[in-house]
Length: 45
Image (cartoon, rainbow, N blue to C red; front, side):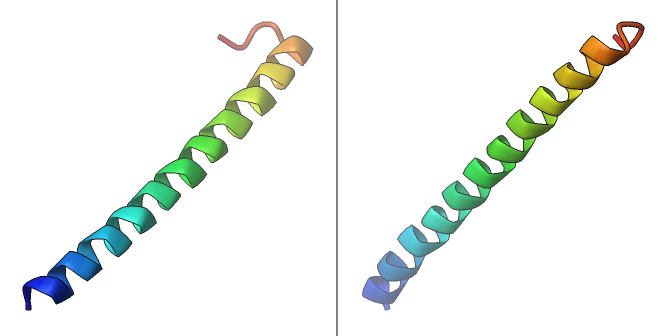
């Protein structure tokens, strides 16, 4: 039982890390896109 849990936890952790990186990449892309739009419309804060 303990071995099964030990095998499942790292997989769940890896999935969480993978999702975290994807979310971070999405935020970075959105930030770059927003910065590009800011240069077009400087009125945006």
